[in-house]
Image (cartoon, rainbow, N blue to C red; front, side, top):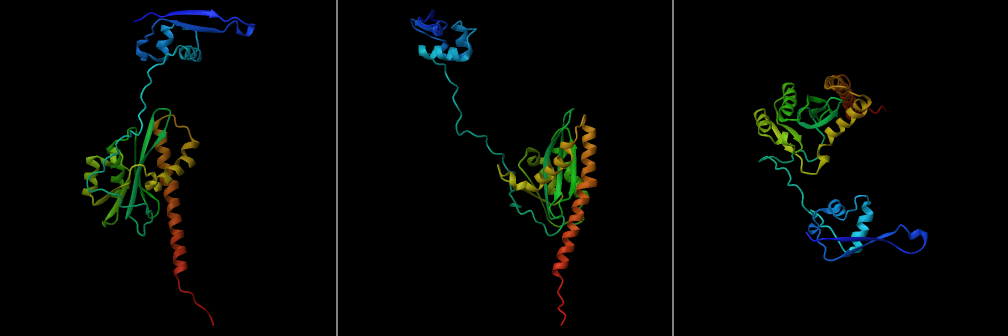
Length: 262
């Protein structure tokens, strides 16, 4: 390591310049090849009491520069691979003319003072009801499968049914894919970076948080579970049923032939 001799002097002049200091570097300078950065430079320059800007000013005056960390430009993570034979069957068509023809599923988190509670729901696009859900403190594939199981147990028909999700690891797992195949469900997955492909589930989570979660502080996981259960069973699903009935009644009224009296 080469030696560095630092000489501090007080600039001559008026009182405003009495405390101005400058650095003169005498001889060759080798500061660990600039690899130690600002902290190492300041320590070797014996400027422990100097500010970051002061050290930067003195190093610039002496022509010293640390070695910057190279920036990673244009390097992105590889997109999650879609299971073989799976594509986007929904293609943002969130309308369903019959129940149990199009389902969507997703996971969201609910914060409590104890830990995070993860909620997985299965939503029927026909009437926006939650037909299956599961909650756990870990967002693993078993939680997702339990939510789908609940929806399958309530299923009335056995015609082809699309179940749409994102490319999360839980939905790409072999156990999840095997369960869908065994129960005649057609797996559909959205493309990477296309969050709008699952807007129906996002809409439900937004309602849940706005109408219930953000209004409450949960000390533990159990009160959060009870509150979510009560919201789905006693508020969201009944409201969606009433809305669907009103839509059907309106459609029936519009489709009736008009009678013109002469």
